[in-house]
Image (cartoon, rainbow, N blue to C red; front, side):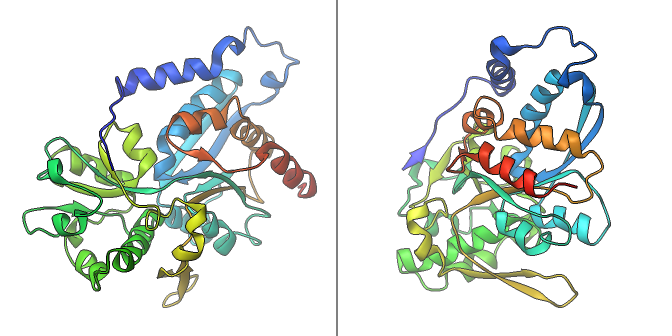
Length: 327
């Protein structure tokens, strides 16, 4: 199935969404004794590139509720974001990863005490109205169509970005699903010049006509009003019911030391977030995390922007994590 749904206008959409989230709860003048007035200064958040739009909306809404706070967002591939902490000594308050496993593997327990899954996603193939042969693209012919010598496609770097290694996992699963041995090698050996550090870096190449197709998350395609091809649940890494099947896909990413590699198995796409142990603005960070897991605030924004909140009572789970990991 191919999705060609368009939104009315991205800028107006975000503005309308922010108004919806704030609603009638728009704060009036803040008294000096109110909780909003007590939060002051910066809040530093490292986050996956695919979270750029929802975290920008969340940050704007949070700062309206807390006028004394300045939220500083820094987007990168999730693996690259972790490396800023472990290798470069950077010290944000919060890290949000497109793969919850990355937090568990590289940050817990040395840099963070816990990891909270908070959202899900799936892979799609996005294109543009100018993309060659998009009129005949289907879930049954995309492997042949994209390998046509006249077609160009892009993907993100599997060594720095979960979307990159999930693309390789998806291709491995597609080999079995479509019974096309060698499919992963055929795709990964072509157009290597179009690999970018994170998936959102591919958007400009697609929209400018330098690429016909990109492998990307469904939420990002929707946020940027791009038509996209939905992939079967057996391969899109978005269906929890297919978890056992996804395990068949295996990739390696760089480990903690030069020459070391970490084996990753395929799994449903789950985003994770953590509070860094040495967070410089812990009180504000905890307030933002509570904002994020609130159904009428952060989770509403995530849902409106194409992702599903992770199942369960995230607010209760966060309270439990914060209560047992006091500074």
